[in-house]
Length: 331
Image (tube, rainbow, N blue to C red):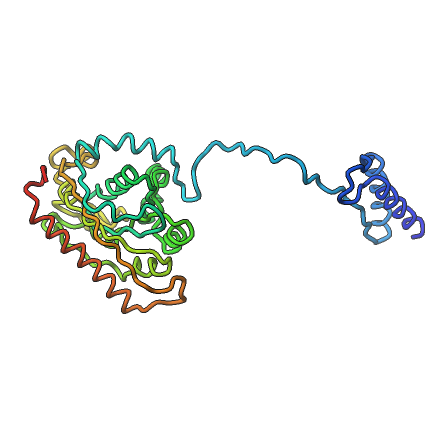
């Protein structure tokens, strides 16, 4: 035991002679070989004696330069890539301007800074409204838009990754809250869910129930306004003429549509090609709730009332726009 302690004292003495105290700039360099040999001998003898040896460890150099990040990707925490989004805008621009001939009214009501929850009606077997809204705001205002979508999109091979790269995010309250409250982004949500695009053509422009008003509670918690958007034209871009409940259950889909596009252009091409319906969009006045954010709970009755009030505003705007529309194709 005495011999072991002597060895440990030798190690400590060697360390004191070679390791510089913190803040000393003129410290001698460490004799690594001697220190390692002495430490190894002391550890072996201490282990045999049933004791642990305390060996000082050289301190790291805090003045070392920071290494360059070798990653080349611009993908953010949500999976969005600005380079991919820029490419998507270039590809989609001709469709936006020349095919749908999108026309905005009240675009100035969308804030240039701060978070806001965009709420719109949803339609078409493969909805054309989401990309039109996202593209229009990003092109006209220069602000990114994150679109909330069902988990189904995320789970699809290739499609899920591409949807994330262009701004798609899984529709979950925590995701929406972080985007709105912490990152002050624009977030697009369709409260009708799959019931909107799953409507038969005979039910066009009749808004479905806005769920349980979850989007209102998220906006209250995040302390941001809800900005309603009424969209006319998406219903006719890919109308559903028949739905198969059995096929939807078999494939695990919310609905399985047969569209007029498929009847005209065939199953494959018709599933990708839209009719050139002119799309008009009207941005309504922002809805503020005047409640403190981050409360533990909010009045359920008020949430439902505000949700229904917003649905009615969009429905009234749709009827007004339809009365003024001269043609499905020319607006």
